Length: 290
Image: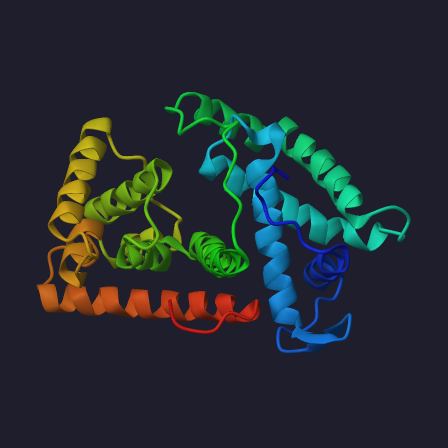
């Protein structure tokens, strides 16, 4: 990890990764005693997720990657850690830090060689750079690290949960949570595709297919450009967050029906998506409503 990053004590790091990536992860509320101090499994699992995301963000193999590519790499590594029971292979010989670096480097090489990894890096290379990848981060005091850990975890888990939702729930909820969770270019394209799908839907059956992600055709480029401008104008008018009326207009849900009915359908989708999001946050021990 880069200089300036917070390095966790060896015992705490190993306990966190074993709690998150064991074959049978403990329940978030389970009490665990570590070096005479009690903590919860949820706290340890949260710490493992944030530490892993930081390592991937700073790994030299991903210097050409952007945040979208790094998130894709993170999901790949998490899945492989779970499926391969990699952490349980540590046999206490040598340091866990060194073992973890070797495992992550091998997994990231696998990701870079995969079709998804190659496609992500090709996409990132065509985007403008965002600062010097060699720039070092300033050291963080403990209290700032704790806040960063909490916010980073909340953001990562929320993004992962939102991406796992069907379009009919995830896209309205993502727009409702803007600007807390900003939309990148790929996500704007997804929103545009979803809106175009509803705009061109012929009847309720096709509308339900849009919500489930079974339809959603790629809109013409001129339509996409016009929609992107429409979205940007809405965000400029309501910089603190989009109203339900605007979200209903943007997503085209219930197009042709009276606005109260459209807003009612939108509220139902947002509420169901929010419940799934909260459940995912609770799974790793995070309390509170996003």
